[in-house]
Amino acid sequence: MDLVTKEAPEVRSKNPQATDLNTMGNYFFKMVLALLAVTLVSCKNTEKALEEDQAPATSGYQGQGPNSIVPTVDRPVQRQWKGIWAFNDSTTFFTNDFDGGRLNGVAYDGNDHYTVWITAENTPINVSPWYAFKVWTTAPREITVRLSYQNSRSRYYPKISSDGVNFKPLDSLFFKAINPGEGEFGIKAAPESADITLAVTTEPIIVAAQELYTSSRVKSWIDSLSQKSYISSDPIGFTRENRPLHLMEIKENGKAKKALMVIARQHPPEVTGFLAMKSFIETLSGDSPEAREFRNSHAVFVAPLMNPDGVDNGHWRHNMGGIDLNRDWQNFNQPETRSVRDFLRTKDADYDFVFGVDFHSTWDDIYYPLDTVATGDKGKIVFDWIQAISQRLPQKKTNISASAQLDPTMVSRTYFFVNHEMPAIVFELGDDTPRDFLKLKGQVAAEELMRLLREQ
Image (cartoon, rainbow, N blue to C red; front, top):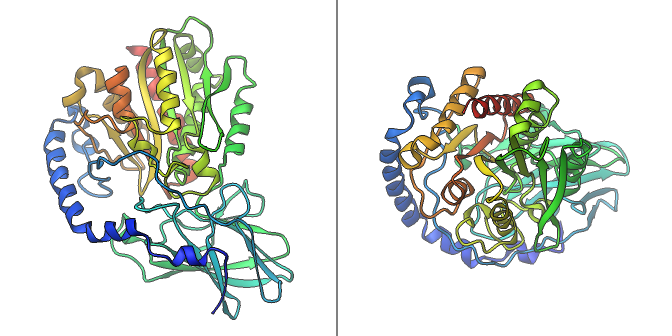
């Protein structure tokens, strides 16, 4: 096997943290089961309006268990080598040298078959194996590429693009799962690896886990919306690599005394959550009579890209501090979470924050609200909202996993409620949810939230 990679020694080295994770797996599994049992008991009192078809799902995707408390002080991050790999007497090329790229090694196996290695920025880490690379040849032909991962399986179905903007899923005829998984959801349901057949030419094509929405592309979207007189944007902070953390303000006039806080993309691969958020914000800032009336009484603050360093560096999960940002809403060791915390503190005197939404992605659509056992009547609007969305979109089952835990705050939703008294939710969209449905769901979610808040 002809291996050509400048990162091979690091890719193959054993990581002590990964080893610790494996040896302690049984302990943590038992602990999670115990915590899950406690949470399920507390969630029996979930809002009565969600009974029967709106009740927490008893089949389908059940969501993750309780979040473990983890340190959020900086941990080392392995930067991937950026460059071009050349094969077959420099007739076939691969590169990761672009924003959002992730490719850690390439080998030529013979007969136009290649293996690419995808590794994480550090470990332990959530299994969200992001990849994105370009490939081209000097003479058009078909090649086969095997996707191979470090301590993971093939979670994301490949998307193909010739321009970096328009992506389409790879034709299923050209996808072959290697060692298929078991079950319907979760990393164990994913194949161990996959062979994909690509028609390559002199023009590079991009192969990516999801659509590329890098910091520059998100900024272009912000700028396009900011052409409207009632929308502005400014940085509220900067990341470890000095990227700005942009915040949009949507205010029709200076009279609004109520406000919403919306954030997205704490985790780099979670593009479907971003796409739903994009539609959600476009609806709130649109020209419909309902939106104009809503903006007369409500301001909307949006941090659409919470982790620009992680996105542009092609990370699986973490920021450049090596940390899951959605575990840092208690200690605020990371600049991204501190920036939003400090912003909210400056606005508390001017606004009554009445709702908070944090958009994410996971294996299937699911809502993570706070149980009304913990929030009381103040949190009831979250369940009314879920029910309203579900009634308008009955074609896709609603999954709900409520939590009654308010300490530690740790995740954004809980911090928003405990520290700013705003009903809040983690709104998750499936990795493979159809993109037209994502747009529709974002639109319906915005329309129903505007209606409920106007009726308060």
